[in-house]
Image: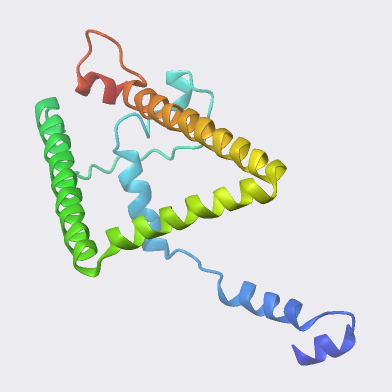
Length: 185
C-alpha cells in the first residue's frame, strides 16, 4: 500500500485510511446463512409464490423450492383493551413520577431558600426596568414591546403544541373502528 501511495503523491493520508477501511469492513454472508434466510422467505405468507401465475410480473426474484420447513406460529396480537390498559397505566406512572419530582424539587427549593432568591430577582428586575424607563424612555418602550411580543408568541406556540398533540392522537381515527382494526390497516 505504501508503494501505491508513493506512486500517487496527490493522495492524502485520509484517502489511504479510507481505502484500508473499505477493504477491512467488507463482510460477506456465509452461504449457510444465505440458504437459511431464503428458506425462511420461501415459507412466509405471500412470498415464494410463482410470480408469473399470480400476476406480479417479478419473475425470478423469489426462488422456489419443494423444501417444507415448519416455521413456528406467530404470536397473536394483544387485544385492544390490553393496549389501552397499558397506555393508561403508563400515563399514570409518568404522572406519578412528575408529581413526586415536583414535590421533591419543591422541598429542596424551600430548604435552600430558592423562593426568596426568585422574589429578590424579580424585585431587582422591576427596579432596574424602572430606572431604565426613567433614563432611556425609548429603550423602555422597545423592551416593553419585546416583552409583549414574547408573551404573544409563547401563547401561540402553546396552542400550536396542543393542536399538534391532538392531531397526532386523533390521526387516523375513524368512528366505528376499533384500535385493532386501525393497526392492521
